[in-house]
Amino acid sequence: MNIVIVGQGAMGLLWHNHMQTFSANVASISLLPSPKQSQQAANNKTVTIEYSYTHLNGLSEQCNYQLAQISQLNNADVILVCVKSYQVKQVLADISDKLNKHAIIILAHNGMGTLHDIAHAILDQHTILALLTTHGCARPMPKHIIHTGLGQSDLGILSGRLSANITNTLTELFNKALPPVHWQENIIAKQWQKLAVNCVINPLTALYNIDNGEINSAVFSDLKVMLITELVQVAKAENFDFIATDLLNLVNQVATTTARNCSSMRTDILAKRTTEIDYINGYIHRLGLKHHISTPQNSQLLQQIKMLGQD
Ligand code: PAF
Image 1 (cartoon, rainbow, N blue to C red):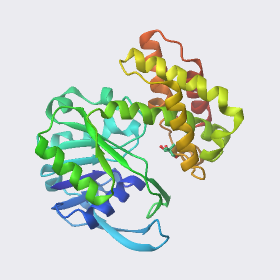
Image 2 (cartoon, rainbow, N blue to C red):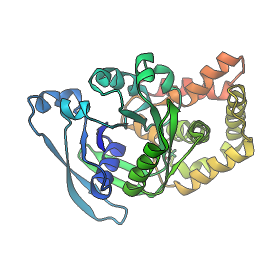
Image 3 (cartoon, rainbow, N blue to C red):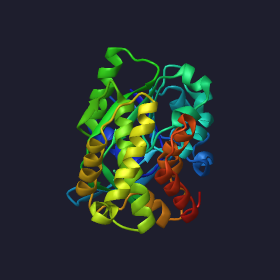
Image 4 (cartoon, rainbow, N blue to C red):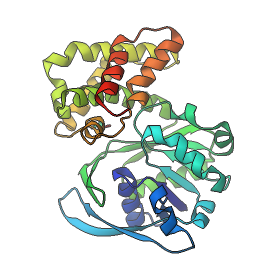
């Protein structure tokens, strides 16, 4: 398989490294040049970028990746999109005319609602998958990533279809790279579960500037119940049935297992970057408006994070 990864952040480099090292059936793997790098990557020149990778065991190694040329985009079987949810629409619009029509697009981001942003022409042409992962990975400096927590990943179809053969090949490829990766027939239900985790942990850790584990303190108990109850109501209106206590248990469990982590939204706020709030609590707020369901707690967090950040 020929793979092009979009996004040179922590997740893009993590998957690049593990696919390059462990997936035998990867023919070529490169990263899409950022707008600033596009001049360097033009004229068929091979551009290699170096970075360091600190593994879970604390050992670091020097690694490198190549910037994708137009021919690699043309021949890509898989486009793995590891950018923030609010960047998905633009990056796909920028590359869609350079892709062959068989290319499978895999979205790996927090939050929900990006499928609605993607142009119909792209959805008609390509099968779109979601890759959800719980691996912890940080990028303290542009050329240094740290694998901070061993997680697991889920892969499944958001739009379009795939043969059983391709499904198996893809699952095997991701599983060889960074196991375990489970194929999910209902990946949208999994996205809702991840959204439940993110709609509690991300805005509260960002707002109060606390580590994930502090979400389990008693002061947040009532708010957590209200946030999850609102999510369960809008999910039901979208034909997804969840039990609030199951989702609350999941939130508490993730807060415990990632207790010392700095959530992605808190990291974005501290670094004065745009957050993914529009695709997390903002998604619940928009669905509330659509279905005439009031979502006061999610809507309030949406406003508070927007006031705090650069959004
Ligand atoms: O966005 C994040 O930071 C992560 O999805 C999670 C699970 C909240 C852990 O930090």
